[in-house]
Image 1: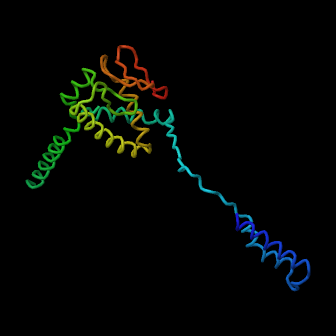
Image 2: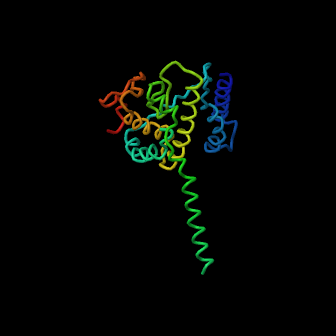
Image 3: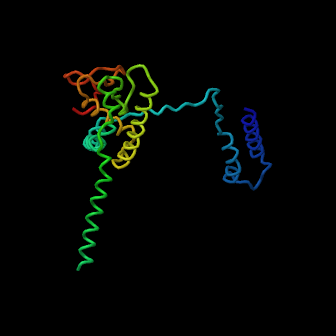
Length: 85
Length: 130
């Protein structure tokens, strides 16, 4: 939050300098380029990490078509391993 | 000429030997496993593995673990061969294993409960092929 405030102040200062004509030879283009990193800084979004751990739940969704595709091979596997099935 | 004959003989003998070694893979269920299935102490789960239906004993646990470890190895190999996940392959086998249960044997219904197979078709996951 502090960083964000600081950046805004800096931009304001530059703007005011250009407006007053103290920085001759600085074309608007150059000024724009110079301001770019500042603008990028100003655009930063700070996201605070949540207190709780992030849990990603992988919902294992087995589709019927997969079961149909594997059916023939599965039947052979059962027959070929009669001792464990 | 005799050496050629000998080579052919040795070759066919080798094939016979290989066939006799491959035979154990076709072995039948052990007596303990057959008994456990018949008396309903173990049953077929939906996920393609064997489960204990009754109060657990170390003997039953060992029997079931031993079979499930072997099943898992087979699933892993076959799943890879068929570009499927282990779980997908295991579930497919589970569908068929439940369908293949004999009357009196136990199987797991989609709600998780243990059911005794009757002559009627078993209650299975709706994704199971007919």
